[in-house]
Length: 463
Ligand SMILES: Cc1cc2nc3c(=O)[nH]c(=O)nc-3n(C[C@H](O)[C@H](O)[C@H](O)COP(=O)(O)OP(=O)(O)OC[C@H]3O[C@@H](n4cnc5c(N)ncnc54)[C@H](O)[C@@H]3O)c2cc1C
Image (cartoon, rainbow, N blue to C red; front, side, top):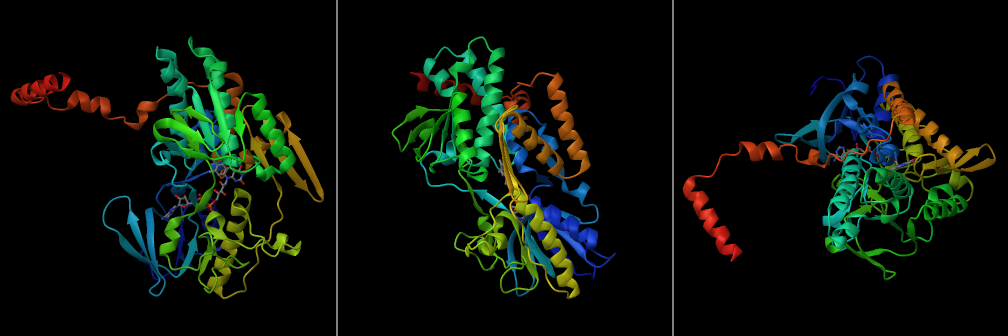
């Protein structure tokens, strides 16, 4: 890493906020004014709103991520985790992908570590649950679901078959409703290639502790979303939660019990727990406490935004809600990142800070091919759309919001190809253990004495 005499702006996290803030800083910075260092355990930014479509195979997974080194050529990008921050010495400890952890000095700090899945100590959840926060999980879910169809098609055991064809999704916000909508669509569509699996054999269940789904689009569209999913055969259970799922035996608080090989957990997010080691002021739910300028309370060299920050919602507060905070979504993350970038430059030059204020522009959600809901605010008008038109809005909005022209073009190309070509239904589950087969072929044969002993042991076990 660079050891120049320039001040260092350290950006912790290369997601939505980290990527856009670093780009903004680099754009506004004078040549040689500072070194911008971005640290993230992944070498790419993930466009999370497209994870459900990646899980359904509508977009190639690689097109949903943006390589940090390519889009930030003037920044220093380090692949690793920031594990601690020493504010007195202004140094961060970085745990790289390999090798010893090391210290990195900084002058200005941006905390943009996002959120992690919010889980509860539910028996079986850690072993059985599949999250939906990263591209790896989306790829894994797609392979897993298609593998369940392969299993169900090839078994003679009715219990195994029923378990394989039962899919449980917990959490009906953006992530949950979109994921079940996309995956159900993909799985039922794939059924036409299987002799022993029909669309009707599959059971999809959506569970939420709240009394509605899709709160982001408002009560009416949320209700429409629920009825729409129910119309497609999805069982929606509201005001209930999952008590346990040991070995895939799902028990809901409302008394329902089912066996399922697929339990997808999308029941909300919480700020990255690593924040508690940074010595920063945190809010009641663990978010970094920032002022309206995105500067961390009590500091003049640290900024934070996005899912890991509690940022006052000035629009909500002006409307009379004194406790309004910006919700954790891409719309705010993107806009906060720009203001944050400008404020870092101003802070470095000793200029005043700008306040962050953004009025909600609405929300769009895709629920499978040609299906969706959209709530758009234009001036004083609130437009509610559903069905195919909403789905076009969803694709148009996110397609254009996808960072970089390279990725926008690839995503639109994926969608265009899908109009002419059939959806890909191959499960590549073995991708998770690609060396297994080679290892079996290449591992040294056991010595004859060991082999004989193993055979005797096996015989003893069998009797
Ligand atoms: C499935 C899904 C669908 C969604 N759909 C929508 C939608 O339709 N509309 C919408 O507005 N919002 C949507 N969101 C929410 C939106 O994606 C987030 O609000 C947004 O990504 C937040 O940006 P962020 O920069 O705060 O966090 P992120 O984008 O999550 O970035 C955080 C980064 O920090 C990195 N990091 C973590 N730990 C460390 C560490 N110790 N050191 C260094 N780096 C670290 C992570 O690897 C990650 O790259 C969706 C989210 C999900 C999961």
